[in-house]
Length: 171
Image 1 (cartoon, rainbow, N blue to C red):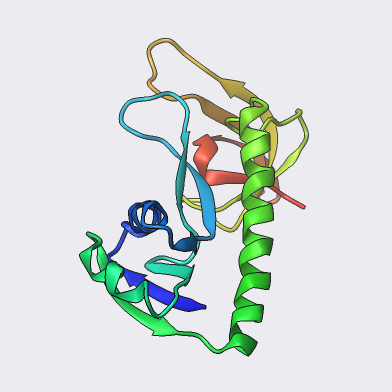
Image 2: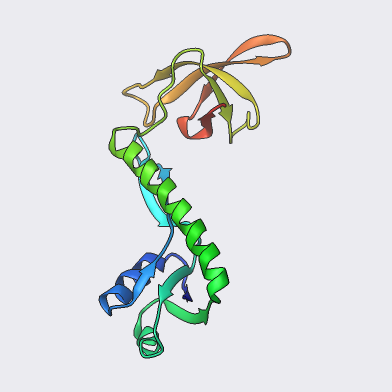
């Protein structure tokens, strides 16, 4: 197995071009939900799980074809013992990717909450805190939906307004 190094954010392009030359490649992928532009909801964006790395089965006759691929930087040979570990980890990442894509295709864009569900706040002014979901608010005059929640502050229940991208289900 060989480890190909590509320029940043060009992994999938290099993989596609190498496969068109008959070189077997794989790039472990991940999917992130990112809000783009002025859209109300985030869209799935597919990127490489290991930035800049492409794993390939390259023969000695094929390696010189790689230098003509746009975005390709260098190649390193990987010992078979290490290759087995890499394949195992890459397969686990691909299974997680396939499972997440199935959830997205089934209609899950933003996590669905039931009133009372606990949410972990991962970014924003309340990062690291836990809040209880109250409701999702979508107003015509606002660009993005908001989450109304309650959290305990100074031993009192306080109502907070959160961005759906700032929270994850706790648990």
